[in-house]
Image (cartoon, rainbow, N blue to C red):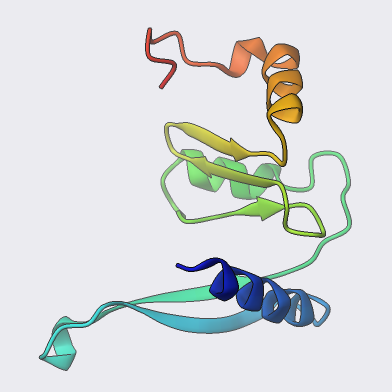
Length: 116
C-alpha cells in the first residue's frame, strides 16, 4: 500500500469513527477468477473514550483466538497496538518513543534471542 493510499484511508477512517461504531468497508484480499473463491476482509471501526480496563474484553477474545485483526490506535492513528493470540506488535512514532516504551515494559519482551 502506497503512502498516499494510507493517508487517504486514514482520512476516511477519521471521518467514519466520528460516527457510531459499525461497519466501515470491505476490501478484496484474494481476487480469484471464480467469485466463490474470492476472499474479503470486512472492516469495522469505533471510537471509544479511554477508560482503565475498557479493552479488556476484546483483549481476552483475542488471546482466546475468538477474534483477530484488531488494531488499537491513538486518536490520530499514529501509534498502533496490534494484539494477537501469541502477543502483540506495537508501532510507535519515533525510535526514542520505541526505546522508552521498551525500557518501561521489559516484562512484555520476548525472551527469544532474536527478540521475536
